Length: 146
Image 1: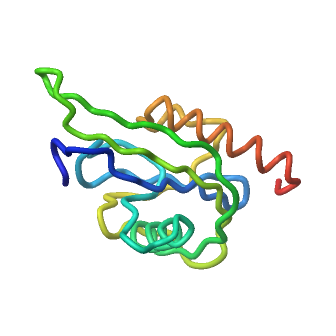
Image 2: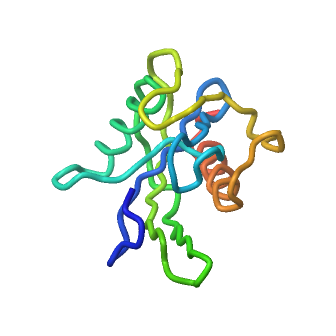
């Protein structure tokens, strides 16, 4: 879980698209337990960012993806009631396209959903997650992927 780390940890988030919809997972563990988010997780020592993206999507949602370009890098810092840093992740968010498999919750995901990016209101998303999804959509449109 890495409560109260002595340095930021690297996490990889993946904005996966299939048929114009974006993959969301409901977190089954802290931080942000119970909230909807992008699939992703901590990078392992010796693992390339793209490998982390593919592994995490497979573990959390059971699907295969083709990893694309960088969307953005985000700091996720959570402080406790006394102001001490409880969690600090540097999140590298990548764009990806679904390639195979049926999405189903696995690993630390409690639930998965293919959401309409134009209607994310039903999902309890962090503002930065909404921003990353919008940026990813812009990148897809610019690349002619829609």
